[in-house]
Length: 178
Image (cartoon, rainbow, N blue to C red):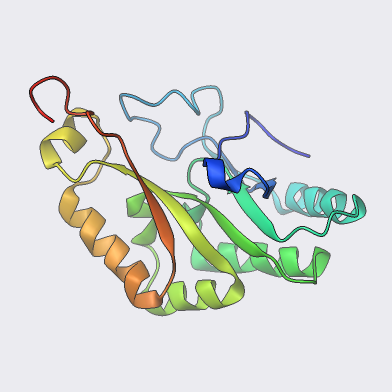
């Protein structure tokens, strides 16, 4: 399996199979995060994805869920995400659901119709680290977006019927700004 850095996943994805499709973080500027510092952002070549899917298939494990690795695999274009799902279905034809991390701004390059299509393909439960809805905190932590962006982009997922999870970092505003 190709992994450029350690596995990062939410606790409820512990039983999932992990597949690297991106490495590192597309933003990599958040003041509090140290997860992806050792790996610059890159997109995995299709050859590596195929090799990893073949290894998963050959293991005999009847995978039910794949959690894509990298801080922002959902940044990939609709067509690239569709191609990845086509490969997953080629190697694991019994059907699996697919999740992963995404930044709020990684939804901007997808229409509601494309999000509905991704949901129908099997993408579901994307995890977004929104940390806070407070613009002052988001600016202080250098998240690269604001509360209005969170509402706008996640509303597109709501409209598409795609489930998602959000991570809040309570207390991120510091002493006297909670």
